[in-house]
Length: 419
Image (cartoon, rainbow, N blue to C red; front, top):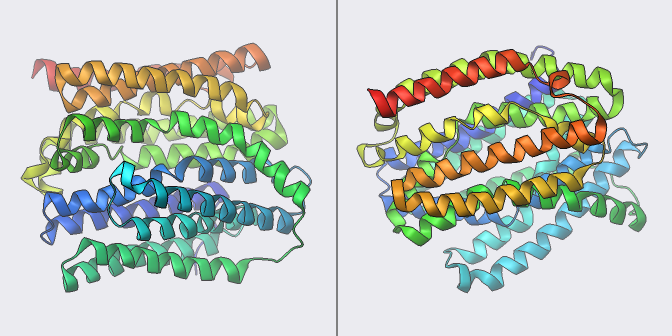
């Protein structure tokens, strides 16, 4: 029997399990003999399908969460969100298929089908969250993560082909589609509700595309300046510490519900929970910074030793990531300002990464990403204060955040500039 846990903890555990399945799969491909070109084929598939889906999937999911308390009947909301996902997936699947000659991606038909079907399955975990079914969410997470690890691995071992392993990922998507159909409550489609949700999602999607697009801009820069093998090395190093990304993003998503529903009490809860997260993630990041040099060689291979510096630089993203002005802005419907912040981040990222890559190589792209993200968060903090009158200290534990940040930067400086 699974013990009762909070909705936030359930979602965080689910995201950790999903990442663990994908991360272990990447490790096993290397350990089972995949060369850098095969790894690059796998990473390019994940990269390109993520490129054409991440923004609108995140925008639609955040629209679901920000409207969960808006008076729309729960079953009707979930039905229309699923339909919106399917329609957008169809559009981008066709777009990817016809643009494939210009973006030089392999397995284009497989990638297009994956883009059509996989995004719909993201509604599964958030429907469990909205329905407060944490136990089912954990069971679903364990089952799908194990399948993600086992099926492609077995197919790669048997056939020695990354392409066949990718077909295994598509098969797992089919299973998740069946689960989505099983838990779906069929409602009459209301075009007004559908269009309303779509237009609400547009600024959120635009924000995510511009801000989170840094990962894909960085990938393009690596492809432009380096060869295919280097792309695989960068992608392995650019796997930002998963606990940072997962725990921070799920906290932000879950707290949107609280802030939109409870206002000041929700903001106070956001500060309390973010402080608790700091006490765990900053020390963990410090340990990873100290151990990364030998850990990468041990976990992956000596061919990926150059990934370490990229990984270490991206560890510094924990500093802006544990500040949550975006949660308050989204909960209050001020998504347009996030578009402005994200636009500035994207421009800065391109300029700084392009300048720094010629100076310090792959690490320069990562440094540009960190500096641009710092600008994004600083601008959003300013907007929250200016438009909502909410001080930074109301939702962030400033002394602890500053103290941890200084220590992390000092250890990084010692590792690369002193020792």
